[in-house]
Length: 226
Image (cartoon, rainbow, N blue to C red; front, top):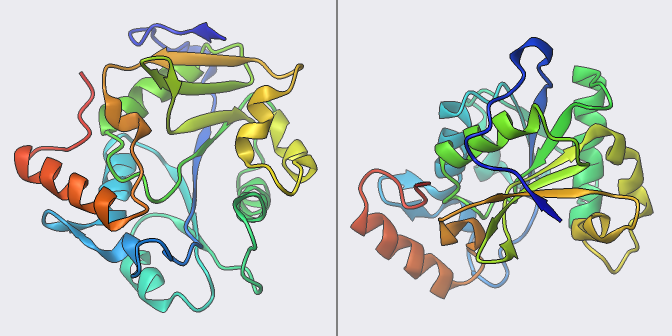
């Protein structure tokens, strides 16, 4: 796996589009209550992520929600995004991503070298700076996948080349999207990050308590990128 320096500038003469895909169909079983609508500072958890994407200039954002998740849809429907609600609840992350990719392809007609940025909805501490940095790096990235890395560990979000979209359906039923990262014909680049929060998620009450403490310590953003 190679590394891309964070200060690399894009080739603005040949810009590649990037759309953000947010699978948000989970039932928050480990949290015990809908985690995306929990308060985090003065905002809801989902608002931290949507605000970072908006402030980073992300033009195409799609969020997948369950048909019965009325509260989440009501909370995000006024944001600049596409809301995808399959008739049947997706059984896993892979199926959610397939729905999002189909919607994005029909709406955007991407080129093979464009990208789709996968962002789990329970990673609200992703910073605007990190998202901008990754989008810049993607403009000159020659690999199939681009992701941030902290202390040798891969984090979120991840940008995939559109040419990989057709391979999502081939992922084994017992594997996640990271299966693509381990295929011998798929190349991966990493952006070194000094921020450990690229590894952070929010699945349990303990995770939530840690993020609340971080927000209280930093009024500007709990996931700032140095």
